Image (cartoon, rainbow, N blue to C red; front, side, top):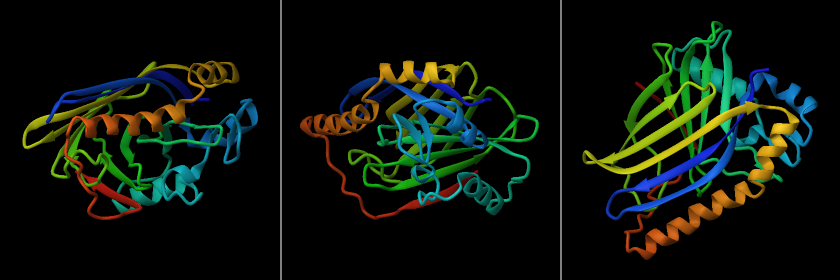
Length: 253
């Protein structure tokens, strides 16, 4: 079994127009999508597509209609001329806690038959129920990957759309690290990161991770809204969302 649990920290630091900083501890699951049925049967207090203390629902990702995530990934790869045969798909995300979850960022790692990384999908959500997925093809198998693209999705009501993202992430191993730097007019305005240390995905480690973060979903959602209130209180301009989407996808070069 290759699925894992990662315990770590999320950090946000804003540089413009005023400095603002916060961090909180989290745990994430790195799920091999082909192992979901096995995990559902073998891990106590964890369920796949049904309620439990900790659970994973396919309807929280991809098309968000409960359809197969494996088929969704393969379809999007094929539509962008990426071979989808004999691939392994791993998804890094927060699980549902007592039925609730919010994933600001989920990452799909797509491996070929030789365990070499060939594609990365960054699935970004906002608090308006919208989602945009950025797909990047990987040319070389290495430990550190860097990508950049223009911002195509309204996330924070305090940041304009005319920005550029710079992604840096480690290939998952004993540690994970994801860093996103956001620039506007060549000025860095936001730094966001998530790191974590790996433990085995078993009942004992799942319970340990849960007991460290029993109200994780509530904490994430509360932190987003509380930090937004503090930004507003600092006098930072509120930017109204100009259009509505549901599940957009772009293939980035």
